[in-house]
Length: 99
Image 1: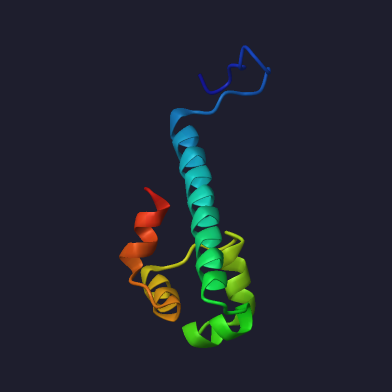
Image 2: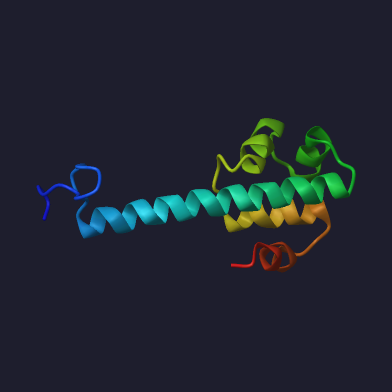
């Protein structure tokens, strides 16, 4: 199976483990992007620019930009800091993600 070609596009087929890892990476990226958009929307809703929001959260402004664009995956601790700055519990934000 490793050396066979796909019937549709003639690309080499991925092994099942590689396929699962690729799917997880894609899901992780989509989730980071969705969370980032949600954080940006909530930040704008309370009227904070990225600089002020970063100061409130104790995070560098450029890192907030990376998060909001989904270019960084944040830890639970960082999510807690972001939610504190938004004035919302993390559970509220996670519910809006509709996991």
